[in-house]
Every structure is written in C-alpha cells, then in structure tokens.
Amino acid sequence: MMMEVLFLLIFVGVLFFTGLTVLGVVLSIGLSFLFVLAFGMLAVFLKMLPWLLIIMIGIWLFKKNT
Image: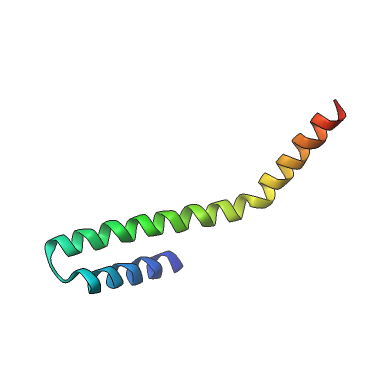
C-alpha cells in the first residue's frame, strides 16, 4: 500500500513540474519507477539487516577461532 502511495505522489510531483505533455508523462513514469525501485531496495536491505549482521558476526567468530 505504501509503495503505491509513494509512486503516486512522486508521479504527480514530477508531472506538476514537467507539465502535462507526452514527454512529461513518460518522464514522470520513469522517475517514479526509479525512486520506488530505490526505496524498495532500501526497504529490503533494512529488512535483511539483522540476518546480515548475524552472518557477519558468525564469519568473524569462525575466522577468529581458526
């Protein structure tokens, strides 16, 4: 739900600055897609961060003990 709202807000915001032309709509869709993609990757990274930290600590302990 939040990603759709974010996409819509970015789309309308870019469309407001570029104007209602074919190029403006294409630019709005492209920029909205890129921003949502970036925020989605950030969300996945933050969701996986605890597991990545556990793996990093496990590797560090394994190398320290060998």
